[in-house]
Amino acid sequence: MTAAPTHPPAHPIAVVQGASSEAIQLLLAGFVGRVQAGGAARVAGLIEEAPQGCQGAAPARLRTIAGGRFYPIFQDLGPGSTACALDSPELVAAAEQVRSDIAAGCDLVVLSKFAKLEAESRSGLLAAFADAIAAGLPIVTAVSPRFIARWDAFAAPLYACLPADAAALDAWWAGQAADRGLA
Image 1 (cartoon, helix red, strand yellow):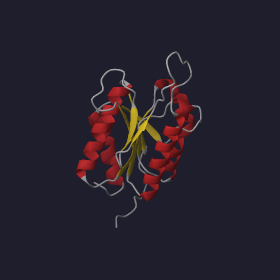
Image 2 (cartoon, one colour):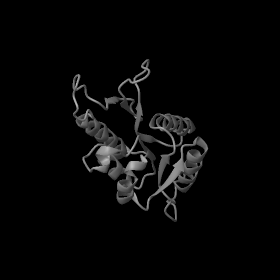
Image 3 (cartoon, one colour):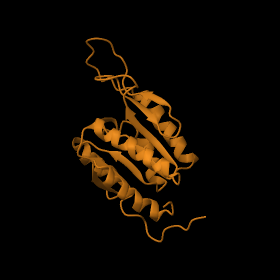
Image 4 (cartoon, rainbow, N blue to C red):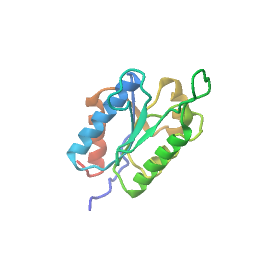
């Protein structure tokens, strides 16, 4: 059994910024791979990706880290539709899966992004963010600059912004892992 840290880890939430959404999602996927390869930490969460074999404007989907299940992000509303194509029920289902993974036990939560639905407090992944924060878990995510004020209202002072750089993310995690006895 590892001893609890005598002080709370600095900035338990890392917000990756400074690159395209696609580049950040690839960075998060690589980060998760490195953390899991170390074998000391259990990771829960979601990463956004395009379906395999699709290039260009393929509809994105969320993949759970713990189980590899896929959730489509957008629904097909047909040609000419101007309505929002975000598939809210699928996002809620994905968030519920992550909440279940958090409850089952994990050491790190990676959530693809805090975006429009979360910023408007209309569910999305908001419940998964809240559960991870309540559990005191380190979180890695991305936040578009256009939603940073809403993010700040939700998560300040628990987060630090990091550049979209593998070394910066790995250094943040090394500090979190050491504080939690996972290093």
